Image (cartoon, rainbow, N blue to C red; front, side, top):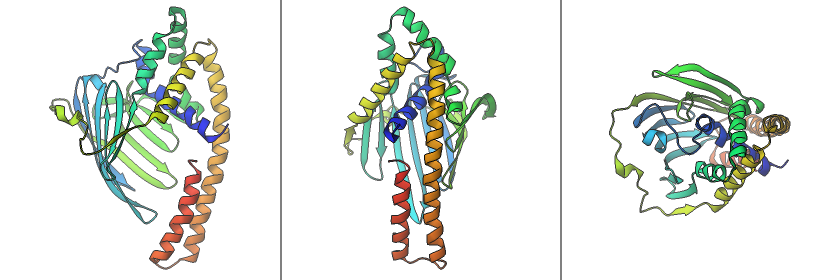
Length: 302
């Protein structure tokens, strides 16, 4: 299996992990948080320092996440100044620092369309399989899931550890309360500090910026739609949970082997440069280290 196919698999996993509680309630289109609206404030610490604000309305079906942080990775200053706007129809990601933006269709809309195509009997099988699989997919990817195992700011949360990150998600929802991530030594911690359920949600915060061109990402849309259609088709098989678990277990082994090899190559590059440059590196040395490091780093995602 090539890396593009594996990326599709991971996309599907993320989609279904974030919506399993919704499927279980026979309502694949809408979230239903325990509050109609809220503003959640987060602190970001570690390799990046900053803050994040999540605006929620319509019981979580419409959200705006504003992230501002700054930090250094491999001597390079990384600035994050982004806005993510999620509505029933679309997800728009805006990078204010780069003055760029992309729009995709909300994947839940594809799920709704595919499920509506099913016969009554197929729908029952699909719903049962989705509920059965649920977060067990994370376990097959080498992760760990503990339902209702934590608490933060008065809300119980599901603890999910997968691919170098441990998150505390408000139980039965995709709403993040805490997360610790460690990817190749780059550590970041995001923690909700306040949930204000009485705050007013400005209507204009959901408006798209007029001074930034928003590009429609058709490639991502086609990929997400194909993945959802394939997953729903697969779920029509009563034995789908078993087959998926077996397939993911095999894929996990292959990905772990590749990850270990590529991470070791990355560490070797950095160790070699550290030995050659024991003093404070000049700009030329920094550039050479960046080129070597980024070349190896890109290999992890291509």
